Image (cartoon, rainbow, N blue to C red; front, side):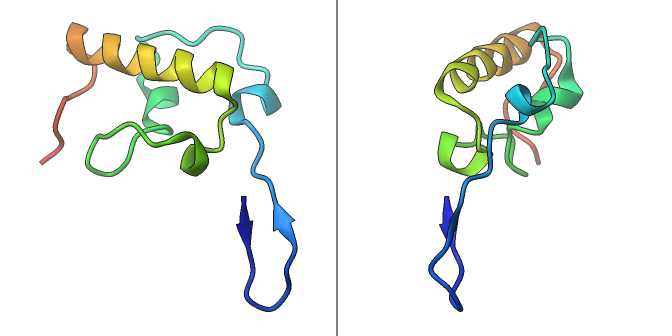
Length: 77
């Protein structure tokens, strides 16, 4: 959630995965997982990524598995 300076309305981002009805979050789907990492390769927190709790946990585990299998880097230079 975030607020604007000119008015006090709060807008929720909404979960990207729920909105687009992504059926399977796989560690091999690097394009989807890169949406949830920062420019430095870190996993973005739930507030910043806008994912719901359920999908944030699944995405975080998929990113970790993807790093171990070599599909995603641990550190981006």
